[in-house]
Length: 441
Image 1 (cartoon, rainbow, N blue to C red):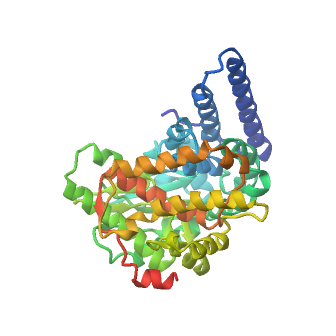
Image 2: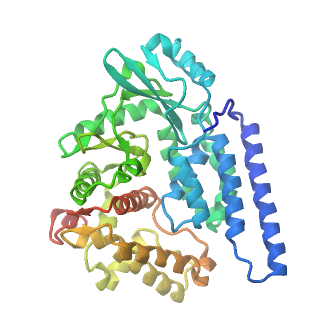
Image 3: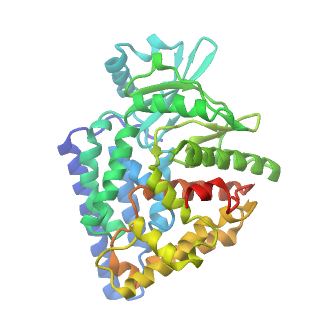
């Protein structure tokens, strides 16, 4: 992929990019409406593809929080049309990398040295480039290292970028500004943390130590002496990314082994640590030569408040929807309703959310769950399509649910999608009388 030799870093430069993107989207809409006047059956496919290309190209050049939000939205195929999710998935590990002179500039600023003065070898070309930073391979003695370098200006532009991205997000997701604010605040807090590599280093060392006892997992060792607020150095984990591994046609036993390791990794963090690696996309996982699961990025970690945890996992209890009063009470406590909702609207959303909760919680209600079940995912996507096309849902154009749910839902949907790609059958069920549900009651 072609390298990027400069990146807009000032507010004026970045604002100009956003304004230009908005103008292109406006032009695409005008073309769409003009064609609709001539042909009333003309669909949105061309519009969505044009907008997706223009938005992704702009965000790729900007890097940082704007591109990260695109990556997040690509993980849930119910949020945006397929043209967007397909394009935005490139942000996971295939963004345009920065050129080597910009990399040297970062090292000079934070270490006072060039990479060649710190390591025996250092790859001039990035081996991986995503939304917040890119990875180079290095060696030091007999150690093979991964050196993650943050793009210039990313950490300083999170807040201003999200303000500039807000109108685009409102248009894509059909939400009002006031309803988007609390979610944007949650995203901003996580992104500010994600651009703080000193915090990431601390969390990486802490979480990998706490998860070290789990079976079939591999974590890198981290090197504080070769890290800074914008650079993290860790062991290089040899192996294949998930998508590459799947092309080797692994056996069902191997698929189940990796899937079980991934499930238990998330299950332990959520229910024991109350802090979770909230970035489950394929680019963050490596399958080693010995058939273990390597976890290579702890940049996005969501700490789960106890009060939210208790209410959220009440909704995962099998049969929760059978006690309507209790179910409605929990939905209200998790901010799924608005004071302006009419009785008819509230009844509509109770029905919608009961179907959503039943689907999300289904893996918890059985001893083993087959994530290769195509019908299960068709059912999820069909409900998403049904809701997004429902006039009652579009009319409300209001965001619903606690802001804490953004990253927990993202984690579960991302986990489910990856387990589906793997085709794994995992021991996922929880006894309804277990400690998990008794804590959540």
